[in-house]
Each structure stands twice: as structure tokens, then as C-alpha cells.
Amino acid sequence: MLNHIWLGLIVIAVVVGAATGNIQQVTRQAFDSAETAVKIALGLISIMTLWLGIMKIAEQAGFIRLLARALAPVMRRLFPEVPPEHPAMGAMLLNIAANWLGLSNAATPFGLKAMEELQQLNPQKDTATNAMVMFLGINTASITLIPSTIIGIRVSLQSNNPFEIIGTTIFASCCATITAIIMAKLLGRLPAYRKDDPQLTATPSAEGRHG
Image (cartoon, rainbow, N blue to C red):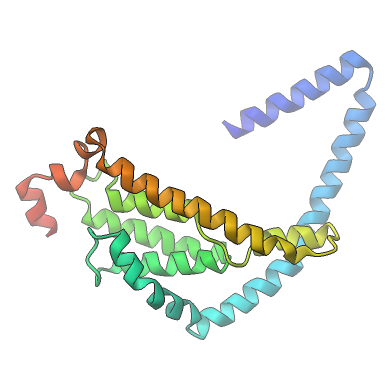
């Protein structure tokens, strides 16, 4: 779908440029934009290398696991359907902690592992449980304490204060996460969604197999 949108934009730009006699300007802007994209990408390498190196050290030092342990009481309230000692809880904690620190690449394997473990608890494999929906909402909104990618882009564009985005990012991501949690909890209680809740509609035999 995204490729079709981009193709449509390119075709529209070329057609409008040709119709208005500005096709050379369209070509020049295309090359300028490509050059800007390369500069931004190269600028990101340095800042991403720095932050990923720092976060890798923090991960190896156990800081992420320490943060995950601090979040454990909150997680038990957010995911009452998931047993505290289940592997899904540990994977979700590591994923959320990594996202908080802006470790998007490092967080992905934890997120995939968490979904895999949550699916093991799902009595209806073709329907997402409330825990899976809640985790996806939190993962997508994701509180971000260190927006390393945005900082990298601002550095590459020679911002006077590339780190001033941190405060607004924390505020915006907190609002998004709170909204995601509230909506997941509220929608999960609506009759239209409760009738499809896998844990409520599970057959006794299914519960026995997974319990």
C-alpha cells in the first residue's frame, strides 16, 4: 500500500511539473531530497552508534533487568491474566524497558518473544487476548526517555540544541501510553469485545490444555 502511495505522489509530481512547465525543478528537487536523505542517514550513524553502544553496556551491566524488576508490580496490574512467573511477563518487561531507553532494535526480539509466549496462553489462536492487545498498545505508544533517533536527526541537521526534544518526547509518549492503557481497559470491558474474549469464551477442554 505504501509503495502505491509513493508511486502516486511521484506520478502526480511529474504530471503537474510537466503540465506547468516546471519539470526541471521537479527533477532538481528530487535529487536535492535524495542528497538530504543520504546526509541524514550518515549523520544518524554516529549518534546511533554512540547511544546503542552506551545502551549495550547498560544492558550487559544489568541496568535493563533492574528497570524491568522495578516495573514488575505495575505489570502485574496491567496484565492480570498473565501469571507473574510466566516467561511472557519477563519478555514484556525487557521489551518495555528497552523501549524506554530508546533501544528500538534491541527491543524488537523481546517484543516478538513476548507475543510468542502470550500466544501460548491464548486458548483461541486466531483471536488476540486482552493481554496481547494491551501489550501491543503499550509497545506502540511506548514511553521514551531517550529519543536517540530524533536526537540523531536533529544533530545531523545541525540543531543548536538537539537534546531539547527530550522533555516534550517524554510528555507526549507518556500521554500516548496512558491513552493506550485506558482505551485497552475500557474497550476490553465492552460487551461487543467481551463476547469475543478468548479467555471468556474458551471451552473447558481448551482451558485444561493450557492451564
